[in-house]
Image (cartoon, rainbow, N blue to C red; front, side):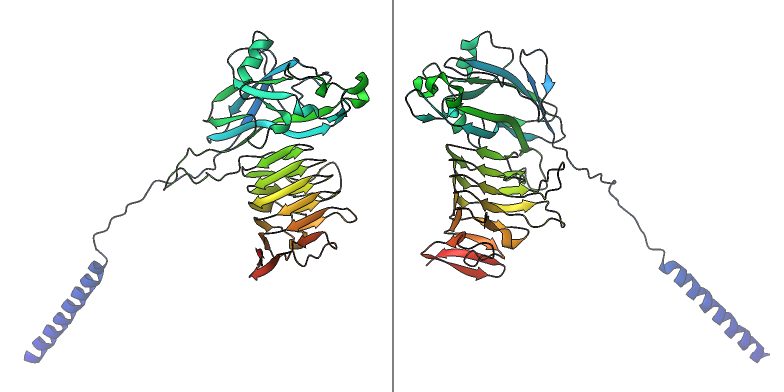
Length: 395
């Protein structure tokens, strides 16, 4: 009897232990819990979009495109002649922007004046801009509004004619005044009244826009302070010009184009965007600098690179010279998609690139693979390799 009772007690105890164990296991997962979550973050790219409209009378406005000619083509220029066009710049995007109104593709055809001297019309015709809220009443009012800031066409550099910051969904209107001062004399009067000796000039008007320091990130609003401010190719055929603002532009024929007798000094970043003429089967180009004729380009600093070069057309010259052009490199960094084409001159030309400084990616300017005596490291300088970079330093 005692044995049966003891056995029942042991079985009861075992069952109790099992129940306790089961309860313990069940409660092991019953800790207090809680969850805190953020809302779903929507990340969206900002849009940079600038529009340019023009008007002759401040009443009817039209958008400009690459075929719009805002000044008269058939004009015969003489002292006192004045033309005005009103330009409206609009920020149609979602980001604040900074813009520059300027000229591009300035091309001079020199003439000979009655004094027997060569002359360029762009040395005598001036261009100026001023904010406007109505059309000018007369010629005197137009010239008076811009004469303090107006420059000859040849002296307008990379800073353009006028520029400012522009918030989203806002506009700014300018009067752009093109005129020949009455002080100009026979130095711009063509010989024998013969069109053959008359100087000619052509140019386009452009508005270039980039990010403005407005929106802020986790630190401040300066993350885009080094954004390129020049977005159109710069081309001159005469005069002296300085490029001191960063640029990113069409590299089909050169983001910077020096032609005829133009002289350039560059101390800024120049990014050449690969561009191809879709109407032909020719390959594209991504030249940061192109020099032709008797032009001269001096590069003192900056970062020179190629943008959006496709894998099926990677052979693009970065710095290129032809004709009798001279390019002198005193500093800067240079990186081409195909390193062998970092510096190049047209075969059979008298062009030369002289290197006195700078850093070159996978390219040794003292041992170029393209052309003989086209690219030279100047006497008194030598190349020091540092990994993938070749640095030109003084002896």
